[in-house]
Length: 149
Image 1 (cartoon, rainbow, N blue to C red):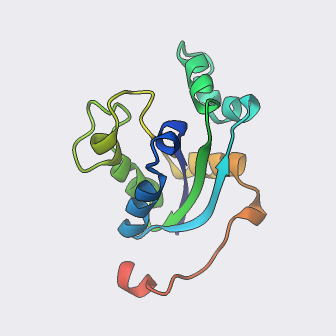
Image 2 (cartoon, rainbow, N blue to C red):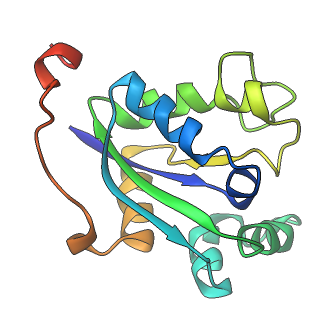
């Protein structure tokens, strides 16, 4: 089983899309291992976006992520990283196909509603930034054999 980090960014929270977006991940078969509402500090946002520090859009990323509450979600399931990224669609909402989260709800590259880890390695790093080990649950869902096989 893999785990991945999903952030429902401030635009998703402000637009009151959180419940329907979480539902899409759950309906696909991923299970919630951690969930919390966070008002990201500048330090947390900078740590999360460290890989973009040298890029010209770094400051706008920080301002955006700290501009409102974010919902941090740890999801678990087979190929969780790839499954979640396929559900989200490409980063640029104008290029995301209908049926994906961004294709259905986003029309910009920055205000694209969600962040999802891009690899298992980065998922582990990002989960450690947003969650303490004690905040993550491990359990077998009752429908496991129906969803996973």
